[in-house]
Length: 408
Image (cartoon, helix red, strand yellow):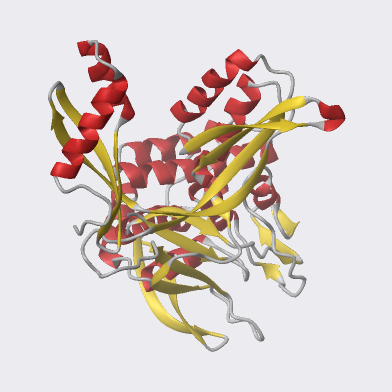
C-alpha cells in the first residue's frame, strides 16, 4: 500500500525547507540531483548541510547556479519540463505546482499566464526545489500528501517588486480556494511561508490534517536559512504506512485510511433518478455511495445521499451531487476507515467461472463472497435462477477452502 506524507508547516514552509525535510526522511540526494539536472542541465548544483535550528538538527538545502541563469517565461519553463524526460508522476507534480504559481502571478501582475516572467514563477533555485520535492516524494513512495495548518508570518518582505506585506499576494492567491488552513500564530515574524512552499502543499496535497494517522516509517526536518532565536525555523515531514495487526504473515494487514464522507439531503428529486445518481458517483470514483430515507421538517419524506471517497476526489463528488440532484449544498467531514485486506480468487461452477472476494485479517479468512455480477451473467446466459448460481459458487468456494475461519 502507498505511503502517506504529512507536513508540519506550523512554523512555515518553503521549497528548500520541504526538500530538506524529505531528504532527511530518507529520499536519495542523487535521485533529486538527477531530476533537477533533467530540467536544468548543467545550470545548478544541489548540496546539503546538517545544521541546528533552535537546537533541532535539520537538513539545509543549497542550490547554487553555475553561471548567469537565462531569463525565461512560464511558457519556456513549461516546455523544458515537458521535454525533460522526468518520470511521469514527477513531471505531473512539477507542472501542477508551477501552473498554480503562474496563475496567481498572472492575476497579480495583469498579464497572461504564458507571459509571466521566469523570476515571478520561481527563479532557478525554486525550480530546483519544486523538481526536487516531487522527485523526493516519488523516491520515498509517498502517494498521498497532507499537511497541518500553515504558519504564514508577519511584517514585510523585500521582493523584486519592492517591499510587500506578509503574507505576499502570491501566497494569499494560492491559499484562496485551496484545502490549506492558516495557523493563527501571531508570534511568527517575517516571511515564514513562501509562494513556492505554499504552491507545493496546495498542488500536491489533498487535505489539512491536525495530526497524522498510521505507522510512522520515517521523519525528516528541513531548515530555513535563518536561525531564529526562540523558535525552530524548520518544516517537518512524517512518512506513514498503514496500521498493521496480526501475525506478520505477508499480506496480513488492516488498512486504516483517512477518507472524506459527503452527504446531501433532498426532498424534491424524482425517485426514479436516484439509481442513476448512485451510478454516477461510483463511475466518478466514489468508494461507496448509499441512500437513506428520512423525514424532514413539516413531516416531508426525503432522501440523504451519502458518499465515501478519497480526500483528493472530494471536489469531483461535490460536482456530481450538485449536477445530478436538486440539492443546494453538500456537507462533508473526514472519517477513518479500517478495512480488511481483500483479494480475488476464482472458482469454477458448472456454467463457467465466478470470482470470489476474500477478506482476511491476522492470517485468517473472515469473509468469502461470490461476485454477484459474475453470477448474474452466468444465470442470464444459461437461463437459470440467480440463486442457483450463487449457491453453486458458495459451495465451490467452500470446497476450495475459501471459508470463514480458515487460515491462509
